[in-house]
Amino acid sequence: MHFARVAATSGFRWSLALFMAGVLIVALALSIPHEFAFFELGFLFTLSIYDLVLAMLGISVAVGMASSRCEIYAVIACFLGVMAPMMLAFDPIFHAILQSPLGEALFLIAPIAVMLAGVVLWLPARARRIGAPLAAGVVGFSLSLFIGLDDFGIGIQEFTLTAVLGALWILLAPGLLLRNFRGPWLTIPARIIGSWLVVIGIIVMVSLYVPLGNDAPALADPSMPDSGLNAGQNGQLDAPALPPLDPAVEEGLEDAPDNGFELVIPDDGANPLLNGRPLDLGRAPRPDAVPDLGPYLETEPESQLNNQPDAAR
Image 1 (cartoon, helix red, strand yellow):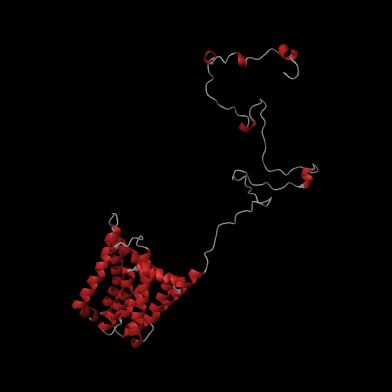
Image 2: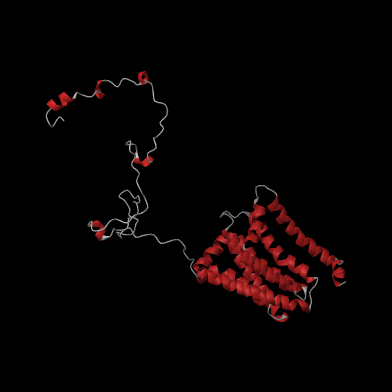
């Protein structure tokens, strides 16, 4: 009954329409085969930054728990207040950031934003009024870095505009839809989501410091004689070195171990590699079809060879 009563209000219908509008835009863009325009790429780019999407969803839960519209306006003002100057003058601002001490820790902004969004959901209502806009500003700053560095370096306005609009949709649409059902029951789920965000932020931060493992086998040292991988003069790799034989085998005191290979020598003198089976070369040519190779291939009589000196032989 409570859900039916809430669903009948105009606020629920407007918030549901806003939420479904974004879902339909993404579904149509991904389902219809076509060449993406820049405004589509901007909206989809924001959705591809998974850690910041989680942070914006956490702030959206805080928007759903807001007790007044002023708190929502404060979140929007801090979010856009940080992103607007960054997008309008990204190059000089980013250059100044790189020259400052913050330039060496820019990779930590995104996980810090995720953890701040999780901490906000643990704060009481009075502290959340300040914490939510602060976290929204950090998320906006991190997102502006991603957008500014990924707009192909030429400042495409359509890409930037739709990326910011996509971020606003993630920040507001779920929270405004959840706001229709706000109440004390939302405190425990919000803290659970906040705990997940803090843990995810810690995992992301640790992964930035831990080097990636190399599962590939180590290359052999060419300077080692038994490395099995010796480089030739032309940069080509020689065949792997064979294992050394037993000294007793080399000196002839013992027979070499049998490896199971047996060479069959045919009685008729055929090729041993064919195991005695004749090689079918097709029909033999007719004698008259053989071309005359001239006197150069004629064999000399044996008597002439015997009369020649040894050097000529």
